[in-house]
Amino acid sequence: MPLKFDPKNDPFREEREAMVRYQIEARGIKDPRVLEAMRKVPRHLFVPLEYREFSYEDRPLPIGEGQTISQPYIIALMTQALDLKGDEKVLEVGTGSGYQAAILGELAKEVFSIELEKSLAERAKKLLEQLGYDNIHVIVGDGFFGLSEEAPFDRIIITCAAPRIPEPLIDQLKDGGRMVLPLGEMPYHQDLILVKKKGKELEVEDLGGVVFVPMRGVIQKRRS
Ligand code: SAH
Image 1 (cartoon, rainbow, N blue to C red):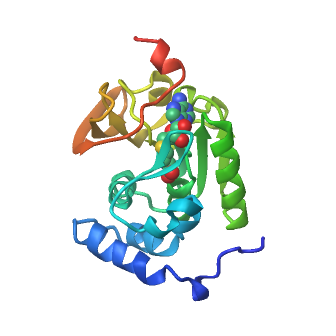
Image 2 (image 1 turned 90 degrees about the vertical axis):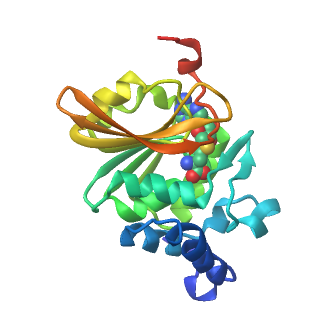
């Protein structure tokens, strides 16, 4: 696979290093594998050209279709909470730019990422292929339903805000597995939740307030 990105000739290398040091490490992210992945993945290639110069700033950025690529720190926080060792099968809901998927692709064995918006899915798929990520599979669809044909998953990450945990995703999470998602009804504030599945029980931990775009599709129509 021709690698479009040459790390030796990267005008953003220093900015990316500063992002990791001052936005991520300084705020307490410690998992060395997460830090390494964020130093490696060229975030600017996932940001549309008109915003590229802001790629390494401490904020989310528009990626088209009214959607956003998340703030670097939040991506690091969610990824660290997944506690990836390298042999996991991971499901992501909300591919968006594909940046979070690339980080997961660095840290897990196999990644399945579902995106509702066809144009975003196609763009992300192409870029991830160009970068050589043959362990990441982008699928167009409503992530509420997960991907039963690939289940169970060791880890699930949802990158759009849901009013409740989608039931099919609880079923598709392996016993002992972890799921991270922004949970909340309100459009501009949710809580980042870490869910650990222990048999029939779900152990839930609140990781703090976040702001994500809402999950669309069937969950908006089904209230319970
Ligand atoms: N992880 C992304 C950020 C995505 S923003 C990144 O790294 O860039 C949230 C994404 O979730 C948007 O692209 C949006 O279109 C998508 N989305 C919203 N509802 C969805 C659903 N029901 N199923 C799959 N994707 C959904």
